Image (cartoon, rainbow, N blue to C red; front, side):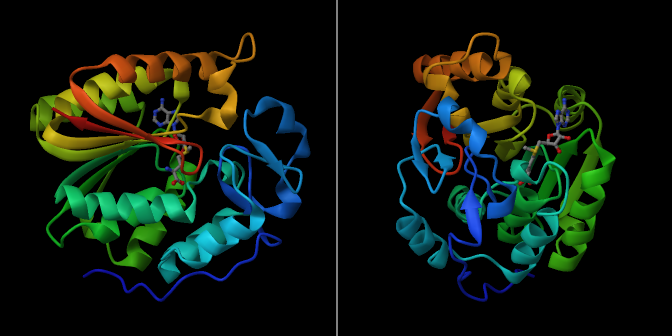
Amino acid sequence: MHAMYPGSPRRSCVEVRRNCSGRVRAASEVSPGKAASTGGRVINKVPVAIGMTPQVYDYMLEHTREPEVLRRLREETADVHGSHMQITPEQGALLGLLVELVGAKRVVEVGVFTGYSSTAMALALPADGKLVALDRDERPVAMAQRYWGLAGVEERVELRVGPAEESLQALLERDGPGSYDMAFIDADKRAYDSYYELLLQLVRPGGLIAIDNVLFYGKVADPPPGDKAALALRDLNAKLLADTRISVSMVPIGDGMTLCRRR
Ligand SMILES: C[S@@+](CC[C@H](N)C(=O)[O-])C[C@H]1O[C@@H](n2cnc3c(N)ncnc32)[C@H](O)[C@@H]1O
């Protein structure tokens, strides 16, 4: 059963700020030191990857459907180490919509953390849909499992704990090429290209691969020397631009999300 959307969150930018990766976090947690590393604007001392005023972001949050269970998950995650890694509410809404648009029944996620994106996508799946959730860290994933239960989607989610590359290889062997409709990559940045190549095999023609953090604090435009993650994402962005195996669009939402439709 799909969860009800209770209406939009009404949270002010005074309470909810976006860090430079576009994640929502409490204002008190925002480190002001990253301003120089973004190519974007600084709003209320918060470096934001895309040009966005506090008023406009407030307005967007107020017009973003966030199910109650996801709001609770976001608030609980705010106290977890690494909370900045969570996707934003508007990204969750987009991922859910994409599941519906693709007509996805089988989805793979690389990078679960406490479960915001997996829950958002699982809620949008049909009752017989399946989301395979990959992460190597059991601790945050325990919270994700709890929220899959609270959201009533636990039967739609298969968790595989371990290095994602190995898990993707195992899925290829078990399920075969073209056996998934959609994938979301949100894990260790330097391995994104490997995940992308494996997912291009796993996802069917016409299927979708969404890739998070493609703007990476704005650093992809001018990677600081030695920032291997920024350089890896910059290389991946260049590769995707020229990759004739996909149709592609880089969407300035959150920390940047590229949508790749396999041709
Ligand atoms: C950015 S967080 C995911 C955030 C999540 N999508 C959300 O909405 O909250 C990245 C996750 O990737 C996981 N991760 C990092 N490297 C990994 C690897 N090599 N294999 C599997 N998971 C990995 C981390 O444990 C972490 O939970």
